[in-house]
Image (cartoon, rainbow, N blue to C red):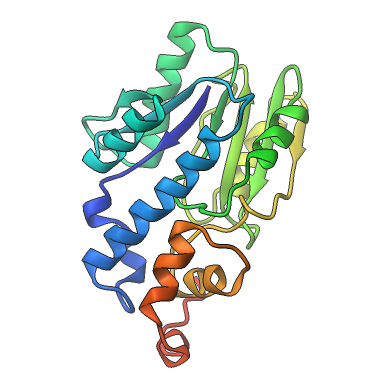
Length: 220
């Protein structure tokens, strides 16, 4: 099952506060989520999809895509939400879980296909963020093979945990999935890359100056 955890978009993307006000950050988060769910929906061979959320906008999109909602009423953060959703998958007998974040607007259906194509019978597939620090996709088979712990530097701990189990751990570098948007340099990168996703078109309309990006470098 593909799991997409979504926090409250009304307070999303606080690390962009130096260049975007909250309404703009919310609009960007919702555009990126739409890009992600649209891409998943367009994949003809997709497995079941569960949207892990209580966010009203995400609930609306899930209904439009006819994706299941795994209600995240406590909103404990991405790690807690996936822990809860994983338990649901195990109780149902799902054979695997693929966790995809909601802020990778350049994701393509062929990349999802690649993840499943390379998935071991038992083991893990990890897709790192472009900076090599974060984890932008993780497939576990069985569904609860090891606990996930998301954050800015989650890739190395995930790789260590996956390899410690003694099952195959496949590392894939996928260009669309690699691009997430958390801080001003990430947004600048999204604007510089080719494409016409909803998130890119929205951000280009804002005409954010190079001076604004230069004044807000984020290195951590």
